[in-house]
Amino acid sequence: MAVNEYFYELAKISANKAAEHGIVVDPAWIYAQWHIETGGFTSDLQASHHNLGGISSSSGDWMYFNDFPEFADYFGRYLSYYSEDGMSGVSSLYDYAAALHTGGYFTADIGSYYNSLLTIVNSMM
Image 1 (cartoon, one colour):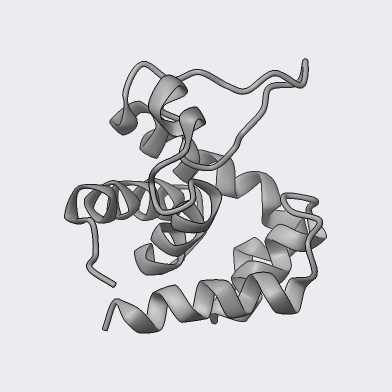
Image 2 (tube, rainbow, N blue to C red):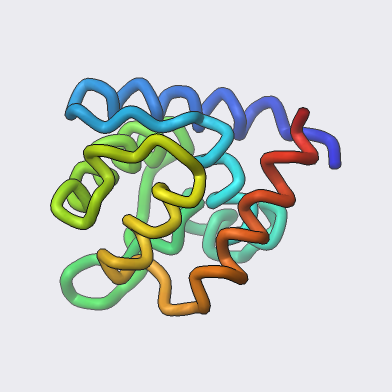
């Protein structure tokens, strides 16, 4: 799989923003998550709302972002919402997936989601 350099650069922005909030994650993990959530960066939601993560507002509507850099900045801060779910101490891709799952980001089987993330991360190397 070819890496979309634009979205990978955005994942780096998110990782840097997360680090400012005490969350240290590999940008490849974020990129893989976005790849899954957007169906390979092809979803209507990402196209119409610049929302790469399927993030919804407190009202339940999809959040709208003016552009992808705005989303990337938000997403880095968003990861800190999962601090109590283990995000503040992640040291592996599995830990990252587990923190998201524990926090309710996704309800799919954690093993399946992790394996999808791992497949994407491994294809990036």
